Image (cartoon, rainbow, N blue to C red; front, side, top):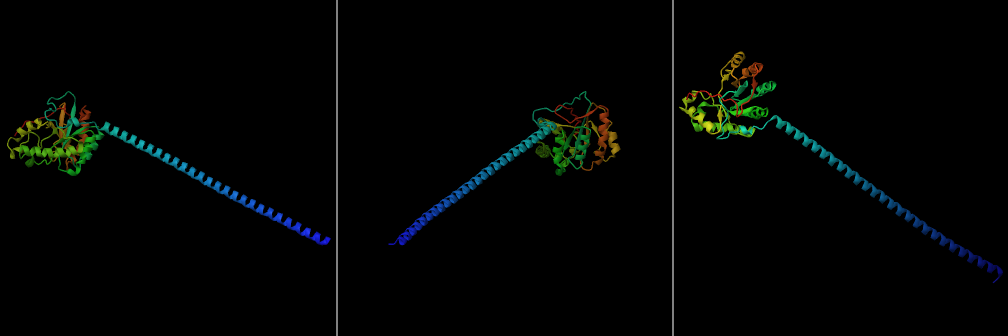
Length: 323
């Protein structure tokens, strides 16, 4: 082989060696680049995952905080409502004293026939409740006066006024359900059946059957004689035996008949006993009574009288029995 051929062969081998080394370097560099890219992608994925996880945890904490805040707010609202309800209950209880001891109690006497030294008008209103009862209650409120309502069932659509009167501090008495003389005085049993009926209605409204009653026409009525001779003599004793007390009156407005407002005022203000049980009506059609009532109250209050409702110790007016 000539020197030229030998040199040429060496050169070719050198080029081949150099080319192989360069390829290896490039391959290594590519591998490294791929690894770097994969590492970067892995880091990016891990960071994104961490960010998302952190965001999720943050959202959960925020939601939990919001729920806690809402729960606390709701609890506060419930407490405020409860406190408000308790305050309203306390106010109502203070305004409506417990009078369940006025329930009928057989064997327990009620009232006295002796008048007290105190100047008192026991205003009594018969035959309601009716479309006039609310107006009467408004007048009594205005003058801070208390009264006793001897109620019937003649207008049951107004029976809620029984509780309305009671809640304002007035006393509820019973005047029989039907107020039908022929029915209530047909017999002793018939009277008590009718009385029991109004007792049930009153109990539904105020929670108990009161011991205060008034006979239709009063204990001195003679109409009952048309239906049962001697029935009033029996009833005045029997009602007391059963724990009731009956109330007549020693003063009347005269509104049982058709009278003008002026006539009612003149008659109703003509009494001067220490304890006056004044008969009036709050039944349908008694508009003149409603008109007269303010003047009647003002008259007696100007003379130092207090308007009170009946209770177990108050004066009891009894008429002479005529049947």
